Image (cartoon, rainbow, N blue to C red; front, side, top):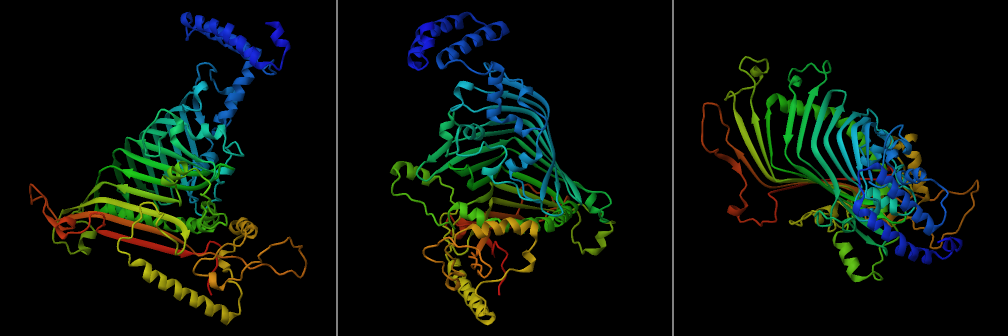
Length: 596
């Protein structure tokens, strides 16, 4: 064997020697060795290391350093505080390890969860984590993390915090092109026995409890698979990859209580409770292969049949809690609008590089286009909701005299079938909506009057510019905070002029056909900025609803009687038409431009 070691270039020759000599020894030993005996494990690891060193040449690091290198590759320690790779008790051969009493890194978790800027993760701990890794099958089998209990504390921010880093700049990423480490991280399987989230705000506190949470990768048709290669779609010609994840849990319990001393109302002392059965979230993510940046995301929350009993005091408390967060959420929405243009440009709707498809293989391109996520959207889908509204006020209560009640202790049931809420946060105003997921305009009457609004808007903008002798719109002082506008301006100045939307394209000066580098001089005039009118849309759809008559304790009945209901079969309405279809569309400029 020594003569083979002297020939460092003949790796193939050494490999053949390993197959003919050492592999036979390992196959013989595997019959009698005990996989749980430390002595046998160390002996087998020693033989394997010597064989690897024999084939690839002498190594410059020990087996312990090799273990640390593997631990750094999967980045476990980056998600925690004060945890180095040396403290991870992980067996290289068995691929199993265990950690306890971990303090998770709040900043990295906020990047990973993409929390809204009006929320801040204050504390995150986990009592026990078990790790299972199949080193030889990392490309096909996921890394499995088993967590016992996770406790999170989230607080509201009076002023929106700075937004988290984009996905391609996140600290838990390896950096550079989409590679092996990114595939391993995206394919991790997580199982949590219990998740407890404590939400702290100025006027109320809430707790969210989830049990038996599982996070895993699935196929594009949302089926579970035993091979990670089936959970992603890659198109090298486009330079994009699609990932599909599913989060499911058994039970959901939400309880909200008012903060003592924050309100003089008596009804806020009643806790608000909500319990739901099995639920799941399906997530489709499209990334760039060049820098791992997220192009667009589709998130769908599916809720099972819901039964919710609300009293008068609980309903008033729910309205109070929602109003207390209204101002904070609105500030966060204004901040997110400033970043909408950059996100839209990554999606490809506002960029100058259209997707080229003529050189792609037809089968790959068609399969990718079938499941493509062309725009970011969020969806809430429920099957059936039974809402019971009950009167719990006593006749001698303080508020009873203010209301002319005809029935004491009444209750009413409202049943809603297939309620869905679709949110499309940023899109080009007046653009095509055929690629929007789960969107349908069966009536077709919207396009005509919306186009009239755009035409009227263009005329008003043109008149305002002629009156003020303005070549470009001015920026409102309300959008001038340095902490929010400085990064946006740098990004805006570096962008190339883009195609104008229908609202401003006719009045915007065209850039030079062949841009050349220019030197900054004292008399140089700044180039006019290219603006784009964007829109955000919320769609509410209800397939069927039924409102039953008010019942009392004295009125016992076997079956509830309908008071008002929608019956598409009786009215001969199309099955694909919702009985209620409501849209709320908001138009805005991401750069904070006000007209005139």
